[in-house]
Image (tube, rainbow, N blue to C red):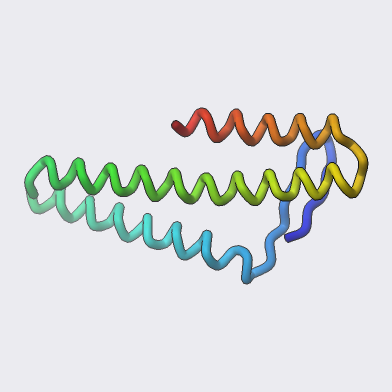
Length: 103
């Protein structure tokens, strides 16, 4: 993972290997959504549909947590390498605010 810091924002650049688990998770979520669409189309039992929605929500939350984890890791690396404690802390708070809006 590499990053740049400009205009008060930390931009992460992941390698293809680092992107792979995130993209796999997103593809699974995409499959879950298609499954839910089929369930609705087929008039499946409502609580089964709600259960599938809950599974999708949990999967999206986990994907977001992975992205936020990467962001916090890069923020710490930035703080150590640049000695810009204030900028790194500000970036971490921004990431945590984003995470809390998800809950």
